[in-house]
Image 1: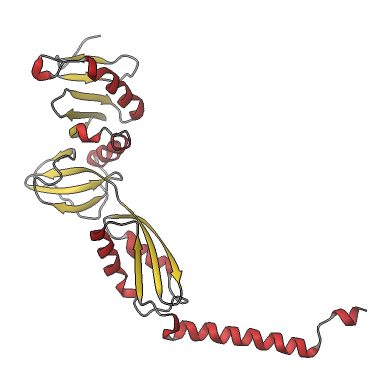
Image 2: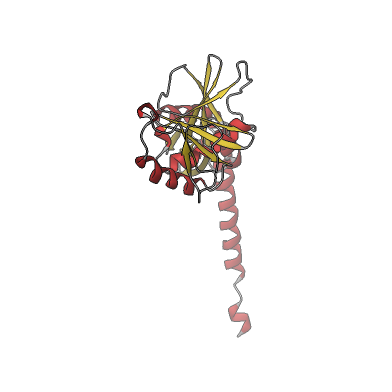
Length: 247
């Protein structure tokens, strides 16, 4: 009975031949143009960024999808300053499909006459013309500050950019004209409104909610209202015009 359950010699030869054929076809596919990359499909990116992505992936034209180094594809895309992350997929026979998550712009960094767009991760996305992105908050730095496109800001400017992510998520960023962190304290200027003093850049969603509830009860500074609102201690919001309010 046991002998009947064992495969015959002929069956073993057929199986071995099939394995060899499959291996040969795989090797042929890796080394020939049978599955060569001829088309790149980009998803998740606006047209300008999609063009950058497609251009960056030209280095893989003609590479077999079977031999494609996926880690190298992702790394090349993540080196683009406007790309936060990327994934890829092989669409046989000739298409490389990539999905891109763009960096989220939150501020314009200003140093002298130079300007750069900065992401929510504190990454410098691109140099921009002075006056561009007028509705985007400004982060001011001393003139001559060294900024490299694609780099991550590690100082207070980077902390400001990361803090602004909470204001974007809350739909509040379009009201902010400038932002800074000094001695660990976050401050923002509002369009036609008071300065916001938020203390350390923590519990920002709570502080934004308190600001939203307080602002409608106050007159604008131009109409005699307070020049600042301090929610550094969320349980005790303070509004006033004295730079050093008491209590």
